[in-house]
Every structure is written in C-alpha cells, then in structure tokens.
Image 1 (cartoon, one colour):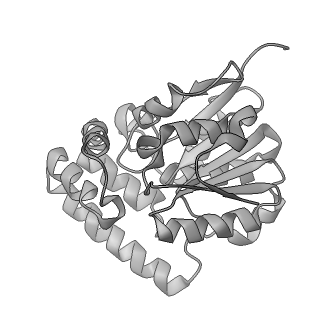
Image 2 (cartoon, rainbow, N blue to C red):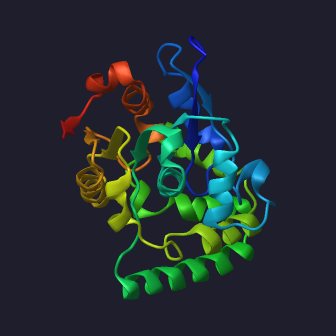
Length: 254
C-alpha cells in the first residue's frame, strides 16, 4: 500500500540485544522504514529459545515481516542477514552489512575457530554475566572505544544470560557457519557494506563482500572501529536510508 513504511529488520551482534540498534534507529531519516530490532535466539528475551541454529534464526527473521523488507545486520547479525537473503532473496529489498563476514573458508581455520568457540562457551557457563560482559568487551576488537560506547555495550550485554550466550556461540558462531562466499553472486538486491577505518580485518572482509555482491557499495567509516552501531550510529543510519547513502562520513568505494 502506498505511503506505508517498509519494514526494516535490524539484526544485532553476539552478546548484544535489539537495543544495540537504538542509536541508529533514533537517527533514521524520514518515513521510509518501520524499524524492527528483535532479540535473536540465545540473546535477551529470546535467550531460552531452542534450537539455536542458522535455520531457526532465518525462520524467526522471515516471520517478522509479511512481505518485502529491508535488512541490516551487524557482525553476527550480518552473517544471519546473509543467510536470510540467500533463503528468500525475493523478499529482501536492500541489504546493509555492518562489520561482518561471509564465513571462514579454510576448513582447518574454521575447525580451530570452532574449538576456540567451544572453549569460550564452556568458560561462559561457569561465570556470571558481569564477568562475561567484561571478558567479551576486553577483546582487541573493541580496543580504543570511547567510554560512553564501551559503557553502552556493557549495559546491553547485561541483558543476557551466560548459558544462553554459550548455546548461541555453539549454534551460530563463525566456527560452525558454512562459508557463503561462493553463493553471494546470486544476491542482486542493492547492498551497502560498512566497516570502521580502524577495524582493518573487517575493512578487508567488507571490501571482499562488496566485490562479491553484484550491486554493493563499500563504505569505510572514518575514525571508527568494529562496533559501528554504537561508535558511528549516524553513519550507519545514513547508509541505511537510501536518500542519504551518499552522505555517509567516510571513504566510499564501489
């Protein structure tokens, strides 16, 4: 129906909840979209849902909108977004991928990551959510964050429970995810890939994603790291809003 905002599904990262998108939603321009930021399985209000696997997460996301929708995902949410887009490409009007990857191709590296994730999951089960939040936030991936960013990330993580996060790591972690790189060429919807300038690993992954997706643009956000939804919410919102895509602060490449 004309004039009805299109659903915009926003998928959060590991150890977060849908609240992780609040600063982006607050900056979305106009009435183009109706934002929906669910808690994903293993997280927040959906923590106890089982099973936790990619198929169940895809079904959950597809059930949030009746027809077509725009789709954005950060980190773990970006990996889930790729699975959703591949499962139902005719329903995804545009795709925004933030600080994410299409998986680990090398089998030995994937096996090593799976073993490391299993070790971390076991550690999580033996510790409090406060300890888990501190441990996850202390990674080099989040080094250099402004205090208000790290504080907001920690506050969001405290809405989770260790045993549910452990189950999510085992069920939808990068180590258990089948790589999707060779399948990306079928995704013909417009796409924007974002990475923070200081997050060099994901700048490289973002460049590769943008090259593999037929209609993708890469945006590298100046002065930002991995957690773009918290570090640079205005840039993420601008990339999501079609009329503002060219106004994103950062280095933009085709």
